[in-house]
Amino acid sequence: MTSPSPATPSPAPLSADGVARLSTALDLEHQAVYAYGVLGPYLNGSLRTSARTAEATHRTRRDKVEALLGDAAPTAAAGYALPQPVKDKASALALAVVVEDGVTTAYRAALAVTSGGNRKIVLDAMIDAANRAAAWRRAAGTTPGTVSFPGRPA
Image (cartoon, rainbow, N blue to C red; front, side, top):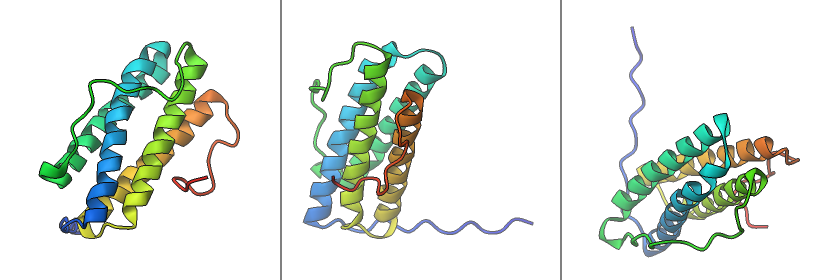
């Protein structure tokens, strides 16, 4: 016998602040997809596989946030300026950490102004990005591998 799964809360209407913060998160999802396309070729083996998985996850999250925002969703730019150049494995891993930290910060900001199903989507995205940032830190040999309060502005 199986237990019924808990119902997922319905998405609630977004406030103007919620739209603004989710728009920021969406922009960072677009940037993440772009960045993984740039950094992926500098990685190999399981790291390249992880980068491809991360890119696919960001595409899925981007689509969810676009659906939440509807007509208010900003469109993706044709390209993005990367926060740092990528020229080797180390710089690719460093960029992956920066990308995930940025996404984590954007979703943490959106968490404060969302509720119901929207809040669950935002929380799941924040946790996922924070976990991925920690994984990239471990892959890069960075210590500490985690931050005390993921998404909290420094």
